[in-house]
Length: 285
Image (tube, rainbow, N blue to C red; front, side, top):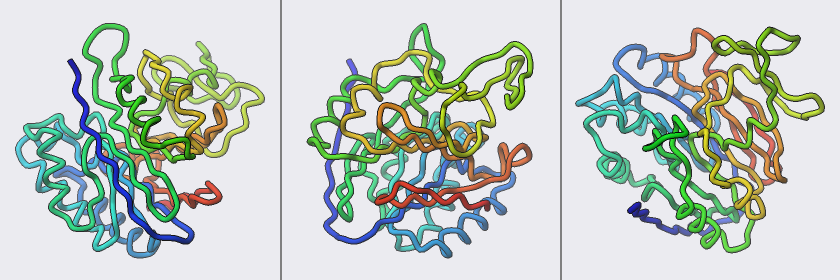
């Protein structure tokens, strides 16, 4: 039986809020110096109210016994700016468990991450953080799914407000907006042996650089949460930075920020989200 632990945190403040979205740092032994320098520079220059790490802060398979070292290298860069994080599918692919990773994060005084799923009230905004899991334990999907217990928690804690969701893996509904082709067509992107592009008349901003990789099973997360969300931010798909609306929710995809994984295919970047306007600024790093 699945057991989820949830925490609800309130930070009272006011005024306009800007969030620095950092996805897929994938910190690891090779190539870490460039990544860390770039992230340090962008944190110092943007002066945001909150930093959100959208999963895969460390590449677990490359750091089997020294995950803490590479996690601390990234978190040390946050200084005194509050930060929150969600788990990615690669974070705990090592000897360090999610519980141990949380304990490391919570050493930092500016850490707002309390568990795998939680809500923060900050500067007039409701911020929802969900652990989208790693790999599906069963048949029918490669990546894990967001469970009904998590959806129920979110609805209860949002309490009829309009929240912003943060999680690593994008919702499966995104594939309803994308066409698949066996041969190259104008404007399509190749991924494996097939080609993909947004369907005609789909209004979007940014780039589809690869086929999105959501779970193959749809548990109804977006449909059930859509009345309570105004935006949802994702990582996971390093080459994608598109933004598109579904069910009244602005889906904000962030590309990878690490210079040690997909950077040779697409330049690393982060985004700044203005929570009032829901507009973003993409910054190459």
